[in-house]
Image (cartoon, rainbow, N blue to C red; front, side, top):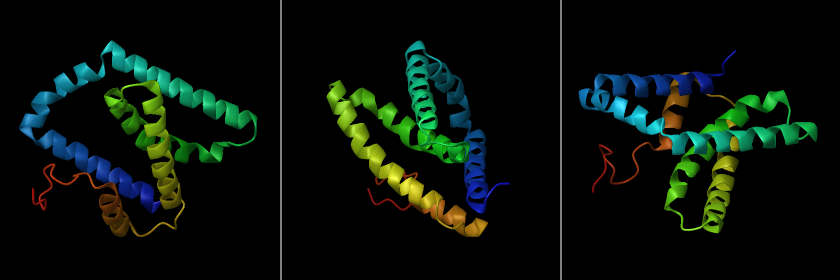
Length: 149
C-alpha cells in the first residue's frame, strides 16, 4: 500500500510526463535524448554506479546494517541523490574533487531526504505542494514563471 507521500510523488511524476508529452518541441527532442541516454559511455557509467550501489547494499545486508524494509528508501536515495550528483561529475577536474563534491552534497541531501521521508505523511494535496516546494524544479533564472532574471 502506498502512503500519501508516494501517491503525491506519482502524481507529480505523471504530471511531468504528461506535460512533456503535450509540448510539441519537447516531443521532437525525445528521440535525441534517448539516443544520448543510450550512449556507451553513459550506459557504462550507469552500470558502474548501480553495481557499486548494489554491492554496498549487499555488504550492508550481510553485516545487518540493511534490511528489506529499507528498500523503498534505498531506491529513492540512489535515484534522487546519487544520479543527479553523478551526472554533474563530468565538470570536476580530478577524482578527488568528485569525491569531495559527492560526499558534501550526498550527505546533506541524504540526511534531508531521510528526515522528510520519515516524517508523518500529510494529505495528498499537502504532499503535492510540499514536494513541489522542496524540489524547486526551476532554480532561479532558469525559466521559473516567477523568476525575476
